[in-house]
Length: 135
Ligand code: ZN
Image 1 (cartoon, protein in one colour):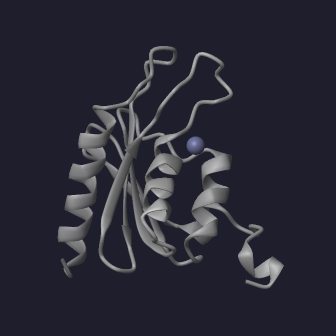
Image 2 (cartoon, protein in one colour):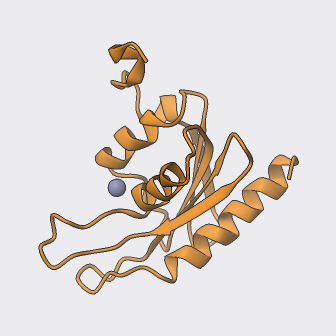
């Protein structure tokens, strides 16, 4: 996949598929995330809640950790899908920052087909990242 529109369409499809698997008996919120790496591989994830609440993990971090656990280190674009188009939380933005650069895209989509496109630099300005630690 080289065409940007094709990649975005595929990421949306994968994020929508993933959100159907959300484990969210407490909030009933269903979120899906799909990302593509610099190698062109797509990973996806859904939110997984926990009765302790604090052990809940968002869809974005699930997708990123799946990618990293498969050996990936660089994410070029993420698509986050939910009914109302919720943006990534602060904790996810920090994790997104770890494996992207400021120009990586974050697309937020909702069930009405509306999409907003941001860069990581826009949604997480002045972020602390690996470069501060010399990496
Ligand atoms: Zn989050």
